[in-house]
Length: 609
Image (cartoon, rainbow, N blue to C red; front, side, top):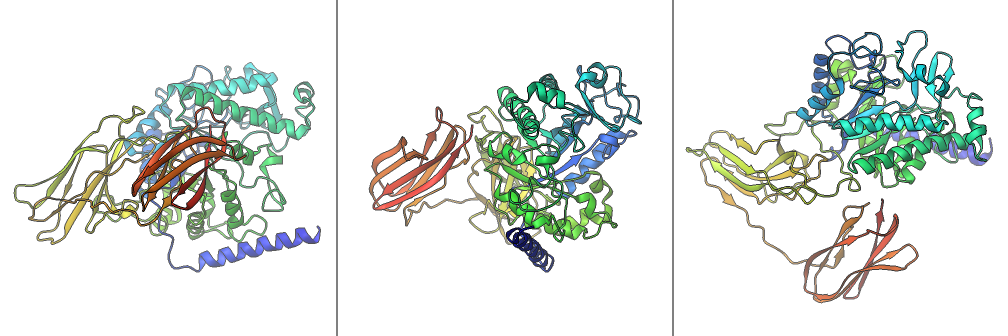
């Protein structure tokens, strides 16, 4: 080990120790953001989170426990080992649905049941596939005569009692793609999700025949990684061609490559162990989100949580980064260095990172069990209850993906407050608006309320009601002197939010008052960051002017070549916005420059197709 490497490793370990000391010594947590991925895996393999008896009732109870702690998305394992938790003409029913032999029809469709239950609870659902695992254990797994390991034994690689499909065979990748697209076409899921099973870490020379046939001059390792990359690209392209709003993400091991490529020096690295080049998937924009399984605590000697999470934040490449949390370790009293507080500290740390948008917990069963008072502890720390009279549980909107859906819904129509006859309570009502330009109608509405003006729409505590309906009733205490101000927004299925309605106020025994917004002129010339960013193919550039004068706004590529003139005119003081359309341009980084009254300002934007 050379001196430079030793110093680098020492610095990493000192940084980790400082992070742990900093986070464990605090008395208060970072305020929870309005938008955050709060996910949980529901693992069906070996009945980790799925019971064979009373499965529907247990699943419902699990979902309720997740909602009550603030989870807003689930990742439901629909294909543990080339089998199906859904009605499939391609693969047999899973043995883990009811405990019966693989291929036994359970008499209902578990995936459809889960989808319906999630829709009732406002949960996003991602269909979780294990792309290559075929037989978990040849000694104990039930294998139907129609299983792919039986019908295509030439596709199978065997490692002890484990069987996987060979990622190096083109027909295998076509088969896996067909299975996934069958679900994408027939089920109303929000996303497609892979776990960390690609190549077996035990592989040595088992696939040399395929390498000799298809290697094409690449090294064995690069060829294996390219086989995985081909599947990732193929799924991305297939989903985009069918439904451009379907999300696609993967959860690899928490460490990519050893130093100097990654931040740590030893451990289990996905790049070489299972040939998963996860950083490249982000860099190329092949996936929408990554969930690295950072299953180590802050003080881990070789893989400290803070160092790895910080590195992943720096390598998100404008895609979503959610950290896979080792919740199963946090509730296990035999795990050294772990506690529920350690878990809460990790979530809190993630919120200080610029490009981490949330967490996904492994796994759901621990919330249903409230093991080690997990739910109570998180609700008392990083997932606090929203302070309103209606929402008495944690709540957060999901982060938006503008490259998947950048069109917000239309704001609610005919918003009004109607006091009761005695003016002791009031009905807040509105009507469903017309569809947005993309044809979507609101999926839910948020009612905001505050006793001061203006209402802060970025403050989660001002959300008093979430509903699929079109009314809310306010019951103040008798004689309450406060004026309560209300406004409502629309949410679409992907949690894009509309502009708020006009604000109205009402007090106990009083009349409804409208709040007029007094427009003010800007006091400075400002160029704002475009939104959405990244974008595809349109984005909005906004700016403000404090004086009358000539305005020049243009877009340039990375070589400085002009690609568009957005504004070339004399304009009065005020606030302006213009839409830039990147149709016909290649994905990449672009710059937009504002020249106005002696000010020159430039900002970056990213086109991702």
